[in-house]
Length: 446
Image (tube, rainbow, N blue to C red; front, side, top):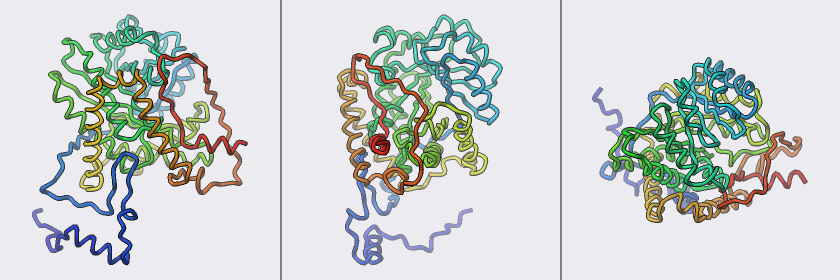
């Protein structure tokens, strides 16, 4: 079909569009009204156009089919975790993120019990992987992940010490008998309040930290980025696309093959205790942004994840949200449905530039891990988090049901989840997850 359907429409210049806006709004065309500047350093415009002569070179690589995922944390009760896994399989979940806590007593027992479930398992170690045991097991469809740099970022301490932890990581990555991938768990940055350029540049620099430790025996590696997706819908779509763009540029400098996957997961920063059912809407839009951005794996979280212990109802709702997006909304039937959106293309381009600039600055100062150990990463995130917190506290940033449109007649939510805050001496200040609504929720309880 060669007919140009819109050839009869005259193309308008930017000035003509502004003149029409001025006319329609009866002179109210102050750019401070029509535009806004995000905390990420991007000023949005009231309209976008694609100038062919200035068209941005953007990478639009999308998975053939995104996969649904569910997280199961394994502690002492392995059989309880198995029941949760079986329930997820019956819900047609494609991938299980099996997070092994330090209280796990036997890796062999876990493999034996879960072996009958024909799913892909991404096994995430919260402790140093026991390589000798793993190499003796039959582990088809099991991919093992270990991210010691994020562990010290979250906890403030190495599991044992830097050399030992990174040696354990290297042994897992270079093992010829165990399937593993580079794992960059970037969720803590978003959940702590980092801007999008900070999130992306930190993730990329951390990946480079790991890539620099590869020896010549590896001819191909896969990097898995685990991202938290916030409420700023179009920015989050662009965030995922920008990560793919910039990372694809970076890996061209290496002489071995590097592939990547992105796991998208709802942020916990915007989760609330009050009017908690709204959390289902927040996580649904986060998963939609993940799909439109081109994430490979969509890992939804239960709406009560931050204040209740894992439960069947919360898990089932989280899984059904993904199933509705796939089977009722048909989000799996179109590849890159956001293509052609000038707004998203421009956001992606600007995030690319901001991320590259931040990344170069980090690398010039010896990389993410070096700055983390000096406290620079923590300081930068805390500054960004405070700016966002100030917007929330003043009502400029809204969380529905918490700082606006509250249901004052509803009973106050009291969570059942027990979180142990141990007073432990740390090597560095950890990056701490902080929900925006924590302060106001504490006032509600008084």
